[in-house]
Image 1 (cartoon, rainbow, N blue to C red):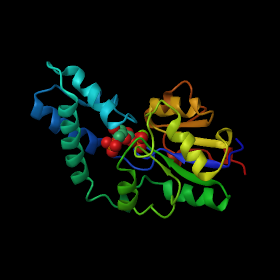
Image 2: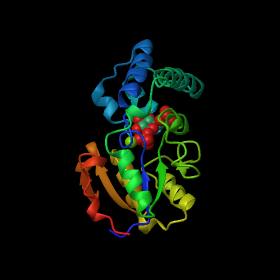
Image 3: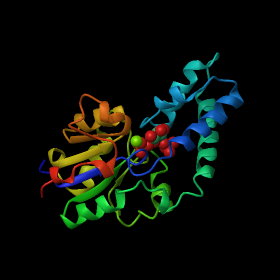
Image 4: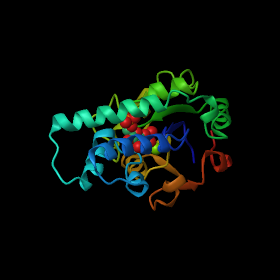
Length: 215
Ligand code: B16
Ligand code: MG
């Protein structure tokens, strides 16, 4: 693997906000009388907020207008943001900071490629803003969500490295598909470790075999 940049997905790779997403969607669904459970929540991994809402509304007995959908998404996001207020550097997965230092020492660029519009807020909460300065591609600068490659192509552009020399680390199937569509090398972690298109697989960032990386 001869790579010059690593593009990290955020939720599920650097830290886990899964449960906060689940609890805030659940609160919204309960308020609307819509069935929602953790199995459905798994389908929202790596999927944008509005696309997530559309999946959740598949269980609804009625149609929602676009204005109503905007309000539901806003309610969920307010709940979600409130639940993130106690996030701290302690929430970063074990081994992630160490891996970032390893990459920086090897001269490998690092970037973020996340579907979340809350990315910069989350990075600030966990103290990673400086490490990813000028290299954050997220839900605020893309038109098409994963599995479209846009978020990763923009991240590669930000660090000035051609896609073929980028490694994408992802926990979502949609993210592995986006990484491959971008022409990048992919490492699936967590649930995405089982994705057939993942070039490499590991339980998490800390258990990834670093000797595979040469620079
Ligand atoms: P927001 P990632 C994704 O982040 C989450 O996995 C997904 O569950 C969420 O719906 C999406 O961000 C949008 O998040 O509502 O904060 O804009 O895994 O791409 O870092
Ligand atoms: Mg993710």
